[in-house]
Structures are given as C-alpha cells and as structure tokens.
Image (cartoon, rainbow, N blue to C red; front, side):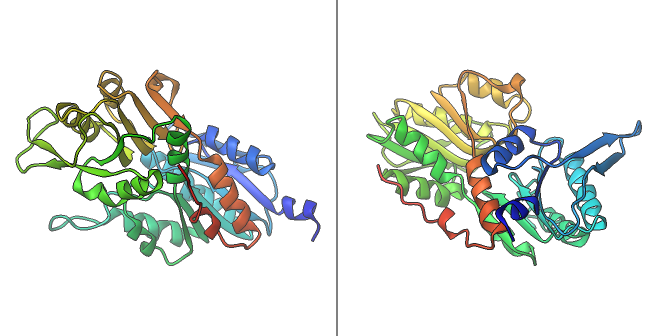
Length: 324
C-alpha cells in the first residue's frame, strides 16, 4: 500500500466536545477532519450524518465526555453506531477526558459503578479501541475488554515548568492523600521533594484551619498537582494551607480543566500565581483568565494515533527521558 493510500484509509472525525483540540490533532497528523454533521431535533434528539465513505477505513473519533456530559456521551454513542453501520474497518475512540471516571467503585451500599457502565456501553455499541489521557484511576483500563491506551500529560506539564525555570527550590504538592502517586511522578521528573496537604477529619472547607502540610514548604515555590480541577475547592484549600505554611509562589497544575460552578472566579482571585491545565477539556473564552495557562496535548494524541494506525508500539510515549 502506498503512503497516499495509507493516509486515505485513516479517517479522523471530531464531534462537538472539543473541536479546537481535534483541529490541532488533525494538523499534527497532516490529515483533514472527516465530514460529519451533528444536528439536534427540536426535542433535543441527536442526529448524526457521516458525509463521506469510510468503508474499510481505520476511523478515529475525538470526543471528551465533558460538560454537557450526557449530551457529549450520546453524540459519541450515536457516532459509533453510524460508523459501524457504514462498514468502518476499525472504530477507535479518542477520549481525552473520560467522564464518570470518579464513579469507579462502590463507596457506599447500593451505589452504581458508572465508569464501568460507560465502558460497557462503548464496547456494546461497537468500539474497537479507546485512547484516553490521565484517567482518574488507572485501574479503569481493566473495565474494558478491548485495548486501552492510557496516555499521560505529565511530560508536557513537566517540560512547561522546566522551560519557565521553575525547578530550583520547588516542591510538588499532592492536594490530598489520594493524589500522592501522581504528584510523586511529577516530583521525580522535576527532581523535587514532595509534600502533602493533610485534610483532618471534620474539615468542611478550605478556610476552617483543619488542613495542614506534611513536608517542608517554607520559603519555597510549590506546584499543587492533580488530575483534574472541578469546583476548585481542593485547590483552594491547598493554596491557603501552603501560604499559611510559608510557601512563596504557588502554581496549580492539572490535566483536565472541568471548571464547574464558580471555579474559575475562585482560582482567579486566589493566591495562585498561575493555573496550568491542558486542552483535554475545551476551556471556553468566558472562562479564560490571565492566570490560566492551557498546554496543548494535541502532539501527544497525534503521535499515539499515528503509532496505532501503523501497528507500532506506543511505548515511546511512556518512556520519555526528562532532564532538568
């Protein structure tokens, strides 16, 4: 097969959740976005039309399961069904942000495990592979019986702080005990010590005095590192505690900028020097502020798609050497 024929058998489609990221991935790959129409009936029902032949092609669909979560999920489900009925060769889902990932276990009796339910739906409707980034819990890969490529944004994030010169006298901070593992990974890349925000039992908010710091942050710059920022409460608690403990500049860093409710306003008015996120979830112009820095992970996804399409290992995306 010629290179031109190979390129023609790779089809990349974008739905409505993150058009900007999809466009950047297409540009990195050097392929156009496929022609698809996503419309809504007056009662809200979703109608999808694929406006080009995809028979026998390897199709990659980019769609985050982000706000509006249920609508974006249904778009993805309907698109998969359309692809399957149009005789696509393989259906590969590129899900930069996997919604419902926090419902990954039964924390209380009679609770659903919604993250598993989503995986069941995606497989049932006909997905062949999932490519995602920074799952809330890595174990979610085991919810699928199809291949899952779990990409990491940490190399892009670490590179950003290195280029800014934030490597000396810096401490990486886990905003709670659950985030210690991923915070330690960034600390290893930056060759920095680790600290933890310790939330005592009975704490109800970020200003109640029950948050203490495990580790030495006095007179040092800090990077509070997590997989996502939702309401911003956890990040607010961290910055207040770090400032009380004598930290100087404090940066927030997360992969997925969900930014629910008044999160952006709270973070903008906080003591954070900068809030560093990626474009796995599209940040609308109304939520972009001077403190928010968005890093693009399009090159990472483009490289993964290229490797998968050519049946090559994606191991190189997990073994980057980062020097400070």
